[in-house]
Length: 239
Image (cartoon, rainbow, N blue to C red; front, side):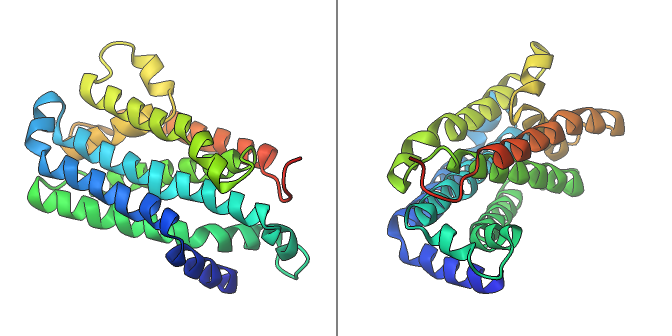
């Protein structure tokens, strides 16, 4: 697994398109939100900015890059060749996505750290961490599922748009308008509860009962994403 991860990390660092998608775009977008945090605070809150930062990294650095990476390795039959080795299927997939996950985790840690320094620190760091982990697991599983219906890395630019832009749109909608109206709909949308969890944890207005209530749909989406990944993922090129 570690050998596969090292090899994949080298491939990622050599691929300019992936570097732009997984590094430059999310960092540039995050820098924009952090720089104009005062203006965004007026339409939402600092917790809203934090939630958008999390979903920007999760959607582009993690989700889109996972889809592109797995589609590229399947197209070149690299996935098929790996299955002929002694490595198990879980070890192969873990090794392939580990560099992407590591880059995304470092990004979100650094970006949220900078935001906490120049803005305000989260009221509940542990709860923010839980929300980030749940969000990233969901986006990773959705990435594997989307890779199953993506024919090529070029095709990934199209297949990733609905989820990547959709989750950011949900995060913005929930972060700006709150959940006083259309509560059930907003919480059941992918990323809706996770957004509310980040916002509440950052702003310091979540009790234990509310936390459990928001974790339930978030974890449910994790389960749905994993099931979709298991059903849709393909090891060989689609015909």
